[in-house]
Length: 67
Image 1 (tube, rainbow, N blue to C red):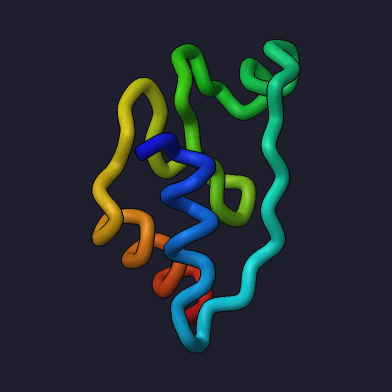
Image 2 (image 1 turned 120 degrees about the horizontal axis):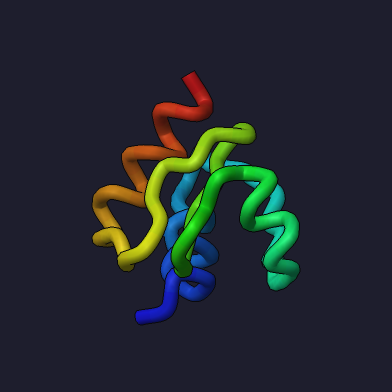
């Protein structure tokens, strides 16, 4: 499953409300320090880059961001 689809799926869990922006500009990747894709940034922090996370990882990061 692609990172975009996985993130959309996990953001639909009850109690999780997030905004989503897909970035395709390599300059913006470098601004965040993402050197390889896919990358996921939550609250301006890179949580993963260069590989796909599991659904549980994405859910955990989103829940932690809400705390």
